[in-house]
Amino acid sequence: MKKYYVFLIVQIINIALLYAATQEERLAVLEYVALYEPSDWIDENEVIPTPADAKKKFNLTDAELYADIKAFEKKYSVTETNEEKRLCRKMSVLWIGGYGTTNDYPYLRSIMYNKKDYAQEYAMRIMLEKTKLTNQLIPLANEIVTNKTVFSHGLRRITYVSLADMCNAEYTNIYVNSVQIRSNIASFFLERAATEPDMMLYVDRVACDLNPTYRHSQQRRDNLARLRPAGLTGEQAEIYDTRQRDAQPNDSK
Image (tube, rainbow, N blue to C red):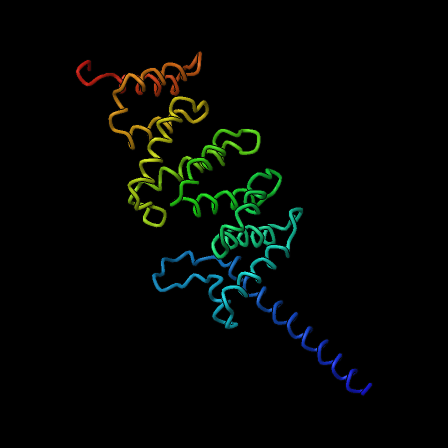
């Protein structure tokens, strides 16, 4: 009986070791996917690897692939300094959003709100992507563009550009085929055109594109006058002058 228990323990240990080695192998495939660089040559036949390749290679269920992605995200820490290892964690954050559920939103938001986390932008991007067809998109965008303490100028600009691209059919990978969502985004830019201090000219242009009646409105003329920085000279002054002339009623030009 004692020998049987020893044999059983050995078998359990062997199975555990085999599983660990198998997961290590699976994580190696995920790392390959994360670090894959497309060819510099235009090749329509080039297949860009995805985590789905690991799923297929190892015959994983969705739950098993997701568990591996979570393990991969934990492989490298927030204090990692190696650029390749950082990229692996950044990509894993995207995959958590892509292969996970709404239950992952709190975790992704915790990364998004940590400006010391090098994966902050990736968490923000995937949150915008995952909420773009929901009523959570505009509140999320407002959180980002109004919080200068947590979100840098670059991240706030990415948010504005992402929402604008969602309304541009040329960007078929992120275009939102929903009249209501595009209307919500148009209203968002109209509201931000009255208050955005740092990217006023970009927001003004998009607000006009998405709200045609705004272009020659008194509302736009008031916004441009109020938000125009004092003491502008040179090219910036000329740009504002051009915008303010453009905002005048058609019959006054």
